Image (spheres, rainbow, N blue to C red):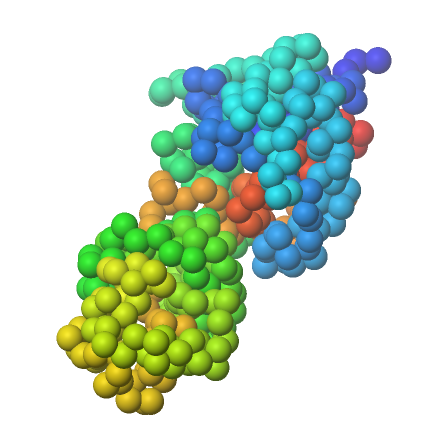
Length: 413
């Protein structure tokens, strides 16, 4: 029998997984990548160590306007299956609180085993070529139109898998061109915004806080209503807030800002205390050291830069002694430490984002096969879809799961 021809547009994580899966199922596969090499983005993941999945999987680790879609895909190709397949390819993993890395802690190891598998399966790879359109031909064929400067060429196949990424981290080759291809096919695009990214804030005092790292909780409030929260090390920068907990909630802030809603971030710098516990803590601190002035009162508790800004915002003079604080001033300190509210103006640009929120509307995609419900023979995988995961290996797990289903679906259709 003649082997089914499958074209994979995009040689990132999801594209490589789709190609490998389809080839294992007997298809003749060609990857078309517009970078000079496939897999470039993998090298930057996990700070160069590649956190390739996470053993702690829950539905709310994945976000989409179509909330049920991501988990159905993840459940069909789980983290356990990912670990088993990467072990078979040669990756012995290291578990750090659920986050899995190659034991060597080299992202290049993950890319190398994928490339070796692509070579073993004799998957064709064409690099430095840019697909601009997919056209439907007769006899169930699809044609990918490739731009090479002013020239146009094409490659035909019975199925095409769109795995060309989002607009995040443009320097690694993500240019958002896949959205244009999908739109030409009739698909709708959920508005795309940066995610897993720093947030810019309105207040001038951030210049005085630049460089501060502190444990805390960040809550995003949209039009006054709390919608997302996370706790961990918050990084304060000259323009706003950063750090893993900020990244985890940033997609909600970015979407709300794009919709012209009021977005605030409420920072709790003592999240292990209730307000009542913190008030008791401050009263005891005053009792033990009534002679301390406010400029040193928080030494050993809060970063000096941070305590200075908090006290200034609370209207408490630095030279005032602890013993002269009124009960209301103690309450005011508790409120500002545990409810420091800043106005979010925008996320940083796409080039600084790890992923995007938004993308091809998943209501137009079959979650069992990843095939388009609008165009037979077209499949989707990875960041191009309206699915984004939390920090911690979840976006790569999405790439593996969606790529696997797309490759298998395309090979067996």
